[in-house]
Image (tube, rainbow over all chains, first blue to last red; front, top):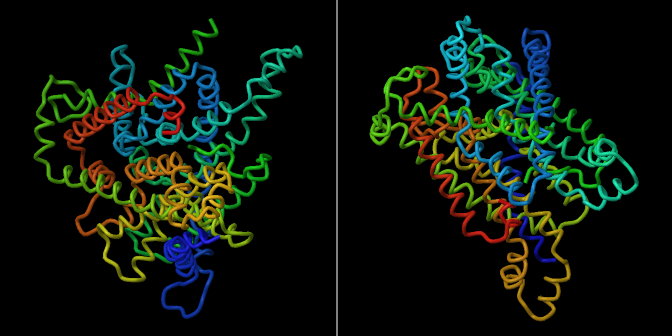
Length: 274
Length: 260
């Protein structure tokens, strides 16, 4: 087929813009200062430094954020998929709509809501309550993350549940299953590919974000993204920054491989967002 | 009872999703520059917005980058998807896997890697670097959106056309493109959305006085945000709502709408 040739420009494009850059980052990661040849110094430095602790914290926070998104998002996706077609499309549109507003602006709005003299504390003040220390905490970062990434959990789960053949549910009811049984035996297992897509789509941005933690965590709580940003934009140690980026990339790849193992569907991509 | 709880739940989640937006909109009319105290209604931030060069230029930069990136990514991605669809074996899976890298990689790693590339060829950060990197991270999504549509298309359709004497280009234009049109459109919408909302990649590839809206907001957040930016987001939100309303009113088939 002559149509194969249509991919050639893209093959050249991805070689330049995807493959070469990754190789370059790896090259930087294996270089250190004036030393000739390659070295693992940057990686050793990372695994011995306080940043390992930061990395562990980032994983923990991203994990909590993913779980919260799943707990909030799953029922939401499920109930939306049970609505009439017209209502359903409006609801899904409403879920997508905030994503079309600049997410930094929305995160900035959260700063005002959570601030010491912000909306929540003003409201509590009406009842004579002491202002809570909400902003610049781990909790604030998690709220910001859940807020930003929740649609990425809802949409793939919704897409999968919505596609489940209704006759399966009818058959299950005919055979005497209760609604609960139908849910746990049919809907839930069938929705797993969507859940897995949702988990990866929330976890990956959550683990590497630096803007949400910079705004809502102040300078008090750093995530691994902040460390990388700092190395590239402030300190200027590209070698060290590259090494951390490579570690982050490796962790994500390992997580992807693990989640893919759980994804029993034939299509490896799971539900897909769109 | 259960139904009421269900509705309450859905309402609360939407409240959570929209609270900051409502907040931004209300406070775009607030007289005080202090963000959290209400001190009377004013339109002065809207006036200020149209005088504020920094906000206006970063807004137009964002739109221009998003439009150009979408156009290039859609063209490149459509051709790539068709080409990949007709590729075989390991070559196909190799290209697909490389295509997945920007999708799976954390934003920051993608951003850092293109930044390193631009340094390698000593390209000055600015409009071109931002545009190239936006094309770089949006195109894979376009490819991934179009591929399923190609799988749905019957393979014999283009073959039949060419057997009947159509040139490959004619077949491409008259058979393949119409068959995958909905995929191309959703790919373009996705690319546009991603580019518009991007911060991380722009942040690492921007420079030379060229800022996108996100980068401006991020740098403003440190020194206190000008409420004019609230005014801008209110206008943007209203524009999106009006646009959606028009789309909703003019589209007849609700199935089409879902693909948006």
